[in-house]
Amino acid sequence: MAMVLTVNSAHVGPGVRAATTGIDKRPVDGPVEVRPPGAMRGGLGSGLVGDSIGNSKFHGGDDQAVYAYAREDLDVWQSQIDREITNGMFGENVTTSGVDVTNAVIGERWRVGSGGLLLQVTRPRTPCKTFAVRMGIRGWIKTFTNGGTPGAYLRVLEPGPVAAGDEIEVFDRPEHGVTIATVYRAMMLEPDLMPSILAADELPEPLKRQARRRAAS
Image (cartoon, rainbow, N blue to C red; front, side, top):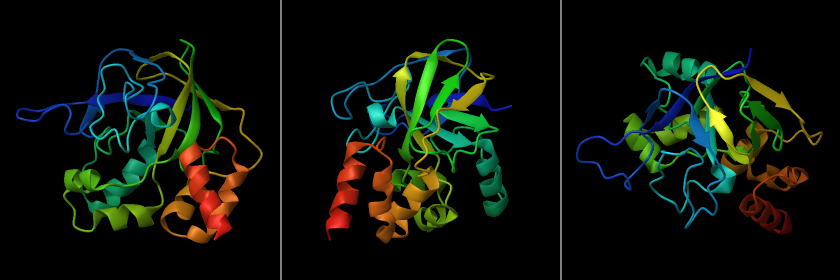
């Protein structure tokens, strides 16, 4: 069964300001309300009430309201780097089980739980310096990029609660076939693929502009 294993929210330790970074996410108890956060800059940041976003220049906003990562992919990384990776360690809001996040189709919808929450897959996550510092592994950005399992950002179509144990129903999958993996390869490894991702009309507008520039060149 496809489900939410844990819901993870930013943890701020001693001496760390909330505005610095929200990447240290840890499982929380009980349901968490999810809503559209608005614009990336000037909005609410994360789609999860109580979560925090550090750098609003690159993170948060409606098109990156919720970040999902598969436990199955965390397990692969755990084996490769020979180190325990706990749920939330990659900065994901929801750690999933039974969902092929890497091959999720841009625009597909996820009905989560029974409280009305409806999410839509928008784009892959790209690794940043903050992520590399958190992992403390030399060359981590390159290693993560080459791994090809970036996780997926989702927008909130209908607000509602999310909690550990909620079932995920994946439906309304577009026929264009452009997946998280395809977009990630185009962005990070094979720029010649960029024009092809324009088949996914559900992509965030900044990615569409980037793809159009590549096509024009």
